[in-house]
Image (cartoon, rainbow, N blue to C red; front, side, top):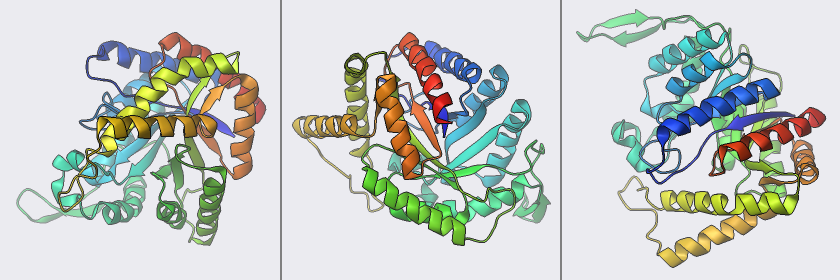
Length: 349
């Protein structure tokens, strides 16, 4: 089982973002030296969760330039917010800088405010994303596409530059929907999901459905025979389990609160807000999520407890764990944890 590094941090807007970006680059360099499989950076807009990640291709280019072997992955690209030709061209640049280390996770997007960038695609965002997967594969392979030019006349264009990789490694992000797992299987992409809110039983069921759909789907060029299940988990390993949990508790609670607030701020297609929670309700929901997550799903503890948890995920059918590291811990704690995790990962591989 592979280990990778996921960035998805939240802040209040008052943080030093110059330092935050430098931390991302430094942590990625360390992960590269330690042998992690990949580094993931998301696409987020206008929210405290993921505040410094509005464009993964820009940061991906920087990461490609300062690393040697680690995979550079978008975790994720919100497909309905972009023209597919631009996705293919932009990431082909990163693929060239990295000499073939790019991978993309396609997301439908969900927060209504994000769609100020493409309001016409909010209602059909799921169908649009599914339809675009095949087109992205063809564009990456060098096929042209006919589009209207500035005068309205059709013209065939072929994305440039050509990527180094013959095929584009693709994932789909799932926020918990079983249907997304089955769709990813039918499209023969990987799945990027989170352990948050899941149980061993629910994950086993979804992974099983994904494997069945993937095996039954028609082959796609340059895709593996067996799909990749990547699970994201907040990660902090210390020499002592109790101490690791103590260090992680406050930043994890703060992060989960930011996530709860974000969930309540989106509007549905009819303009109705999803939630109008009071402060007390937010606190109760945050504490519930915190206790449940520390009980099962977080990669927080000693080398022994984390080794056991990784073994459990592997037994469930997980191929890769994306270790979410930037949820509020100091940089040195993150680096120390990554070194311990790398040793555990060598045993798990």
